[in-house]
Image 1 (cartoon, rainbow, N blue to C red):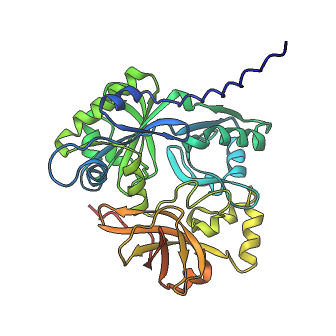
Image 2 (cartoon, rainbow, N blue to C red):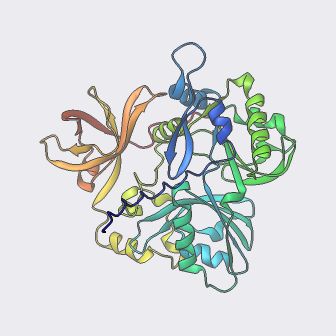
Image 3 (tube, rainbow, N blue to C red):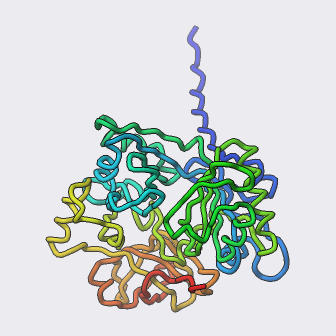
Length: 392
């Protein structure tokens, strides 16, 4: 007697990764989303009175006071050994030879075509010791790519320490006032894109970095990723910032803040299909430092007259919100590009976007149309960034 085979079982879904604060976010009733395989808070529930609640309240807290982000999903990859500098120079576009101990800079891992494997921060711990902070959703890919490029080089030891770090970001004009309550470290002496170590909230050997992804001043603290230590730091920072109106902030506010500040996001303004010159990140591109992956392709683009496309800033001058992926048209209705990132700007109170368009359009400064769900909405080109924090 024949038997009917049972239907094949559907493959089990890969469980989402969780930071040490996952239970804390859920206790705060945060809206959780799958972000690059991580279970992360996108927004915390509205609280307090007035109009600044939810995501908008989180955004405004960072612009005017202080906000706290759990960014423990970010990846940390360490290079150690006498060949570390040479390896970092080979795989990144910025010039790491210019870094001093305790200094960091923005950089990127590039494909041979000069496009992006990922954008990163490079920290020089010592002459033979470098820490690369990479994006959460690309950590495993980045580490595999790095091992492929330099894993067999003599004199280096590569380690993916991502599971061992929690990273909390304190952002906003009152971030220094908040953090100084918890440490005797001279925070004012830490210049932008520098870092040091100290005891914070009773947690020794905390790495304190002054970088950020919001357009405001701020700090990141790196601590062991166990739940008790991470929760202790999170609660201490919230308590210290209470008098300044601190708010826990999710990925939604992180995105609107970085967009106002004109900061690129992997998979949007930068990707394996967009090169450094198109992305407009030449400030951090050091073609004169010598050989590195992607250099020859970028030199060839320059020698051939420059990139054919550019990232531009747009401000909507008619009613409508330009969202990621929406088509961009010329005023004659010809498709010319697409929105890479777009949303309302809570602090600026306008609708803004970044878009990838032909260089000729970018150079002309001409207005364009954005196809917003079938409606053609006019937008004007404006310089990036949209927002610059005031000198305080």
